Amino acid sequence: MSASGIAYWLNRESVLTRTQDAVLRDFEQEMQNRAGALPEHPTQDELQRTASQMATSSQRFTVLLVAEDPDGRTVYGSSGGMNGFSLRDVPASLRDAVTERQKITSNNKYPHHLYWQRTTDGGTPYLVAGTRVIGGGPTGYMLKSLEPEAKDLNSLAWSLGIATALALIGSALLAHAAATTVLKPVQRLGVAARRLGEGKLDTRLRVSGTDELADLSRTFNKAAEALEKRVADMAARDEASRRFVADMSHELRTPLTAITAVTEVLEEELEFEGGGIDPMIQPAVRLVVSETRRLNDLVENLMEVTRFDAGTARLVLDDVDVADQITACIDARAWLDAVDLDAERGIHARIDPRRLDVILANLIGNALKHGGSPVRVAVRESPAEAPEGPDAPDAPEDLEGAGDGGTVIIEVRDHGPGIPEEVLPHVFDRFYKASASRPRSEGSGLGLSIALENAHIHGGEITAANSPEGGAIFTLRLPRDVSARHPSQKDGDAGKEGAEGEAR
Image (spheres, one colour):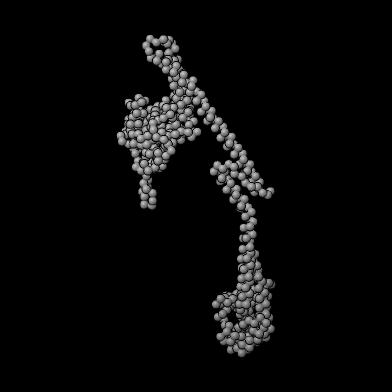
């Protein structure tokens, strides 16, 4: 396009300049030869005859001569007749320039010069020029149509436009062909990167050539191979760690059972007045009993965690009254005086009662231990999800993932200082403790994590937040009918798995 534009501009200037120079040169010569031969005050007939003779030159322009006759009247002579070229067709600025007398200096030897101007009339371009005869005589004007040159230039413009369009199409095809060799490998690289991000670590690129894209593909393959190896090593170590924790938990259970039995005997001896235990070692016996219980709880928690990690945890569903279940949990742990229960009887749910007990025990126990009394437990139910469709109302967020049976919402709130903002994102992390200065606190750091896992296996969720009035709020959301989400889960009582976690 740039080349065509420059070519058109150069050709236009060349054509117009060549025509213009030829016309002006011929007009100037005619003015010198023919108009210069006229007397200083010619008659109109003489002007008319001279103008007609001047128009017969090789350039075929129209001539207008203006002079004063012997009587002092202004007379005109036009090669086109009375209705042809007239003084009105000459721009005023050009007439003023032609008639103005220039000061004669060393650089300007003549008082009058030849002036020209390009004009347009009705869409047709014209060249208009004028000058006066040196030494006295008529003033001459010339009108030359540039329409032939304009047609030639238009034809040139069309030719260049067609050539430019063909060149653009050809260069676009060439550019597309050239870009394809670059874009296809880049596209394949993008697809491979997305597959790698989706976890398909065996993704590799086919490498061909020796250019920069080939080097990039080789680098990608090496990075993918290293990542696959690293992930495989991490998975192997993670599996080994899980297997170690599971094996360790199972191995600890047998000696721990014996130790627990001994500590129970020692505890009975402590409670028996006049027993045979020396008062000097009674504090040590109490410490052994306390640490044995703590170790037993830790082993049970580790075994529960390994079941979640291995995907072997199963639900044992039953129809329960949520209020009765919470009351039983609180009563079994002697928390009736420290917990306010706001729950109506008759809210039934089909869930695993043992796992609900584990969740409640961890949430309420955590509130009593780290919050402030009284701890308030509130239960409410959310209706079933609204029907889908453009006219359906917006569903409450409580119903997300609840199924058609609605949702049971249990809130556990304490009146303590609340949870620090930097701790909130980590309260459900395993072995996380808010205070690093209490690494040997009574808890194991697994309680809330196990509660969350038990909620997830039901298809529910637990969230933690701080109340504007003070204290922390843990909100448990469970679907009322878990069997609709887990049709493969069996019904019945707590069963074998329940017996294993009974100590918690």
